Structure formats: C-alpha cells, structure tokens
Length: 83
Image (cartoon, rainbow, N blue to C red; front, side, top):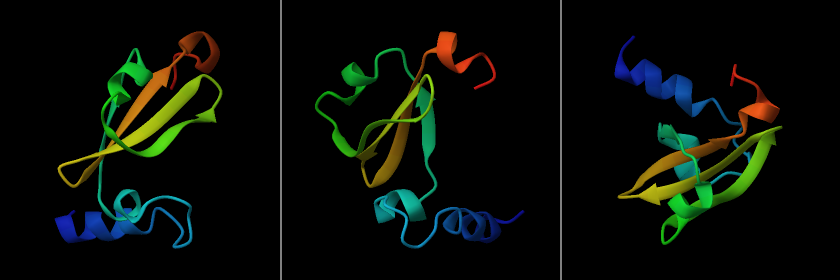
C-alpha cells in the first residue's frame, strides 16, 4: 500500500465533526504505553486531556514538534491482557 493510500485511509478514520483537534484527525500518530501518565504529561503541550475510552484504559495526546503523540496507561486488572 502506498503512503498516499495510507494517509487517505487514516484521514477518514474520524468523522469530520469529531471533537478532536485537527492535528489528531489528519496526522498519523504513534502511541506509547506508560506506567505513569500524569508524570509523562507534566510540562508537555497536552492537546487531548486524559480520558478513559474503555474500562482500565486512560489515554491522552500531546503535540511535540508538530506531531501528535498518544500515551496510554492500562490497568490490566480491569482492562485485561488483550488490550
């Protein structure tokens, strides 16, 4: 699959009126699992505040050098091992 196809597929992952920053809706991002989300976010440009999209999972996004980066903190005793 070419980069253009990947970008087109990613662009349509979110509805146009989804309540996320355009940066997150239009630029592919990486995601990192962390042990302490609050510590990772300290002093960073947070563009999506910590929130829980599913039980045992807390996510947040920062912007760094023009790129969105997602961080996840997972409580596997709640979320399970398949997350």
